Length: 376
Ligand SMILES: NC(=O)c1ccc[n+]([C@@H]2O[C@H](COP(=O)([O-])OP(=O)(O)OC[C@H]3O[C@@H](n4cnc5c(N)ncnc54)[C@H](O)[C@@H]3O)[C@@H](O)[C@H]2O)c1
Image (cartoon, rainbow, N blue to C red; front, side, top):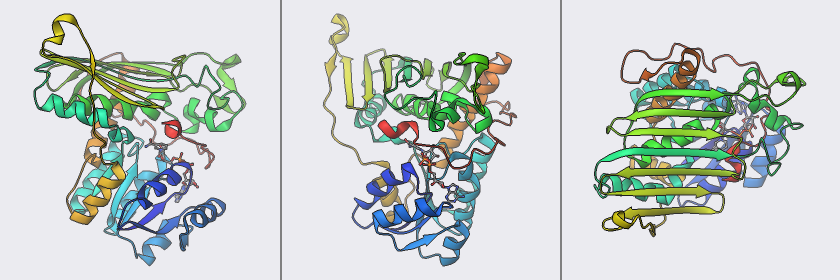
């Protein structure tokens, strides 16, 4: 696969290293509107072809696929241009800033017949994959209840830097600077973690979002600190289970932790992913009488990068697709409306979000700083 890297910031480095470790993958070109970053990146990875705009790269055209590692708001227009040029696209999460854009990208990719995948990173967590297999194999019986959480503490601790003084964190607290808060940032990860692990879809959502006062007047310099810091969701799953999904940046003592608990009639599973590793534990069979939990060994799984490369090679679409990410984006959009209107939404009904969530945030330039998943 001849791969073009679009956007050469923080996440692109991790992506390029991941793709270059795969046999048969060549990074043949790089694009960034920031010349300094472009050359630094291309020098580091020894990439000859360098472009300041995607249009120039498309006019050159000597690549099979592109990985779109631009900021969230850039994904829509650039992915559409790549799809129109017949290129396979691996897009960073979130697919777009709202459901309407995500759906447009999905329909364009499907109509063009190109491979389309979204980098929902926690699919690389082997215990999550094993948990899903066990659910699908019926080892837990009927699933009745699901708990999922994504916990971070960077509003409390300074382990990743100081949000009070650093713009790379401050923009994430401000809707005017393009942030949908913790929901927009890591919501898609934990929604996917829950639904994928429990092998079902979310059908109904009711959400509460909360922004805590963090500075005098709720503002630091040009940053209004109005983006949500914590969210809680109650959801109904398509398999009939009830679930709670929540995330916070105020979770003191948790730098970056995803947790999923799946409770079935015949057994339960717990998946925990932290910066230092992942675990799967189960309470199954006779152990349910004594509530004994045991560690479950899990083999390594291919990464999203490996699966995208294989999909391009074989011409066979793999997960997570644009359509899947668009469906999760709908949950996020509806969660925002749910908070405003204090009502539950049925994802299967016609009441799709009409909000303009994330459509026209003020420009914040390219100074986004490292994204949260940096430490995962
Ligand atoms: N999957 C994960 O776990 C994970 C982790 C971190 C970031 N991300 C996602 O990766 C994406 C990039 O995040 P980042 O932290 O690397 O951001 P970043 O700001 O470090 O890098 C983005 C780069 O894109 C460039 N750019 C902006 N507009 C462009 C355009 N029109 N054409 C070409 N280049 C353009 C910028 O100059 C910048 O160098 C975001 O969507 C983010 O949500 C995902």
